[in-house]
Length: 253
Image 1 (tube, rainbow, N blue to C red):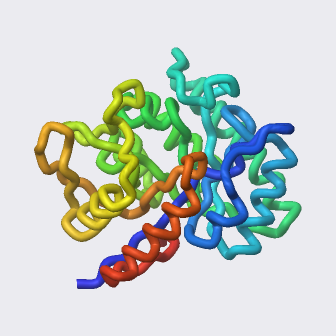
Image 2: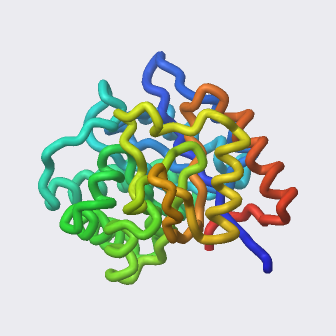
Image 3: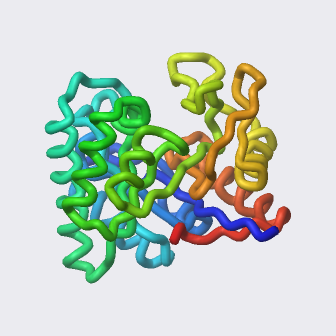
């Protein structure tokens, strides 16, 4: 059986004089880039430069809207209403689209960031507001969301093409959610272990949770965090190991 999967990475997360991640190098190994839109990270110049890098590397471009929390990098939950979530997502997609228009480039997808992403994975009302925002901007956009979450359900319900996302370097709970970053076992730091988890998710449609239970999920796209300590090395390693398993890496379509 032939397997294909998209490799995506969160990028454009530098801000002003602060540089985060090795964008130029990691774009050699991924097929989709989620570009920060200024709320949790990024600024206008970083957005423009990151788009140019993605275009130069033939990587598909997506908006990566987050909560307005630069200090917390968008990873702290905020008490927002569905209407506020809708407005935040529309606003941030628009910011990225402005630059794309000036560069004659196309936006492929939208992937919420951090706490907004995790909140929408469980909160149906927030998920539906985000899906509606994406749809209202353009029903042609692809919505990236945690596999089998409220967000992917909302995207599919409204008629968006929806990509179910899995994570190479994160552990899972028995309900299919990601282990909270507040817990010591949230991250997988061993490269071999992380890649074996990816291969299992792509080829079997399951992941082994921290409780030892195999949880069913769909793996359309794999997230590689661009702010990791060895992000470029891990992206290269992942691509090589997937190729060895004859898993084709291509942008989600």
